[in-house]
Image (cartoon, rainbow, N blue to C red):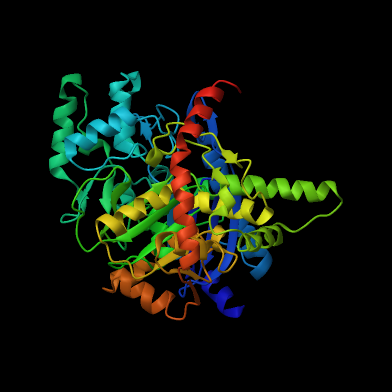
Length: 534
């Protein structure tokens, strides 16, 4: 307790704030990475005029509430006012589209990663660059707006992501960490900056429109982990902490996306290591020795926060449908006069899944709340199917939803392992779905035939990861690499539990995936049928 109080009082603790899909979380950590206090704000995206979005007012409200909760916990736990910090880091859900004019006015609604509305743009840019440009990338959204002849495009002065926007508001700096920047526009691993050849190709492509900007000028400056990305301004301090207690002048690390902070939080930034973050979405990040032999729609080429090349298998949907069903079970129990604590409910039901059939007894689940690019769905419609001859049991029901949560992502991972022969010794699991030991991790290990490790810190999340990157500013200045910093100072004594692939489960999952892929047209039919029902 006294050590923590000393770190806070002397300004030697770092703050990390991450804007996740359903929760904004703030953490305060010491030099060893221990969490001293937390704060949070729950929010949900809005489906407005066909766009998944979050309004600017909620971004600001959530930022202030998460920080206020953090500061209040510091006051209650340690009897101290939070007035200064060693460093601050901002992270957010990856990529998306946030354009601004010269006066700093937001030109259109924030178009999040969840939107699958840029297929034409994505396909054209992928062909132009010979480089996969996913639909959720910022450049896909920009070019789609151009194809749509949207009036706001000619007014753009700055284009950024959610993490970049919040960082800009707090520091005045228009910058972005390389990991997040690599989801705005392709990065050249040799230079650590946007690919110059592709920048020029894009400018040539849109030259007939005669916009008053060039693409390189409206994108954020790219920084790598450890570089100072600005300082908390007086205006930023008032925005973050309206009470006025927090002092300006605190240094910031480069803002990053949740993909990058997930890699840091699982110490998966070295070559041939990988991690899988599972929450509203699911994505596998594998650090490569070399570039892939081909271009794959199911794989994004991004980077670690230090700039190393990464293959990313991303799925827009993962745990949302599981959460919905767990809530329903909780409501059912409550109707019978029994209330079960949420964590206990998840643990009990997840453990039930291990008693299910290896192939889920013929049940199928598609938790597609939004579109899923890897299976060709522009829009989503969650569906659970139980054929008349299926074994419809509780164990199979829960197991089916866990299998289905990783189904779309598995298609991309299979390309890496089976076609590209990428050597992956072990993958780190990251996210609340892995909280129950040896359930989701065992299923995932069997699905991809790679051991899946889960650290005790698996549920800490990206806020912890960006706080570690904030802490790293000092180590970087001392000449230590990010890899060595994490190994030596953060994860040297980490508790790790490893789930090995199970042969019977692997065979069952393979059978499940055959039916899973065959059932996609059913989902498309449901989307078409119910598109305008609500």
